[in-house]
Structures are given as structure tokens and as C-alpha cells.
Length: 178
Image 1: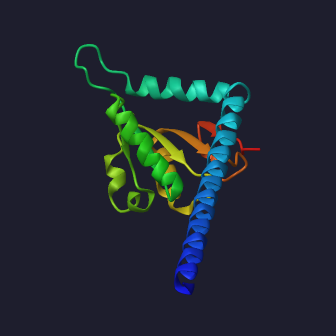
Image 2: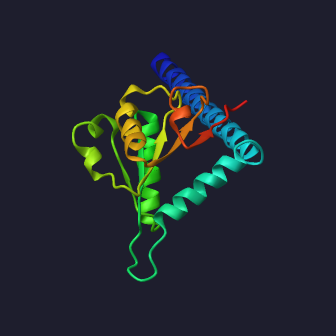
């Protein structure tokens, strides 16, 4: 019966196409994992080298800022984390992780900062600002605020020659993955 043969052939073609889609999806997932692995290796290598000292200083600064008073239990300052775009998503996650693990922290959206949200930044808070390029215009308000009111500023960027880096007290220069 010719219609059965066509149906069988169509079914074989559909299965082959499904296998090809699955193989393509798996190959894409492997490439993503390899890219992420390369990024983590580059970061681990940097933490053994040029990133070690500024990272340790940043940890010490954040710890000292958020240290709880033994009598009152209150911390002097908080970590104000800011970034825009993908850096903003990472910044939100960092702030949430700090807060959920007992480090007083909150996310400050840089576009909202100049519209009243800077009022939530206290005199003992530390700004942790993330920008891959170091040129994100919207970060100008929180950076200028930190500089004007004497808040410490930690910049996380891949571009240590950017306009953000020289304004920071500590620069965490991220490596590019090989």
C-alpha cells in the first residue's frame, strides 16, 4: 500500500528531524557550559593573581561596614548594590544573597536613584557598583552621590580603564574568558 510507505517514510523523517533537534540542543547546552566553565577558570585564575588583593580589600570593607554592634546587634552600614541590564540582574542577585545570609544589603536601581531613591543610602553604607563596560550612564547618579557624601565605592567591571574605575575606592577588574 503506497500510503503506508509514505507514512512510514514521513515518520522516519520526523524522527530523524527530532534526533537532529535534540543533538543540536545538546550541542548548544555543551557550548554554554564550556563558555561558563572558561569564565569560571579565568575568574579563579585572576583570584590567584591580580584580583586577589583588591578582592580581599573589598571583602574586608564590606565586612567592616556591615559588622554588627555587639550591644545593639545593629550594623553601622549596608551594602548598596547597583547595576543596569545584565549587570543589574547580577546586582539584584548579589543584594538578595547578601540580605538572605545576614549581610545588610539592598539593590538600588540606577535609573531610579536620581528620582528619590538615593535618600535610602546612609552615611555608613558602601556602594557596590557593577558595570561590564564601566561606562553605564545611569550609574552616574549613585557614583556621584557616593563620592559627594564620602561613601566607599567598590566597582566591578571588565574595563579597569573605564570612567567608573578611577572613581572607585576598590576596583574588581573582571577577566575575560579565554
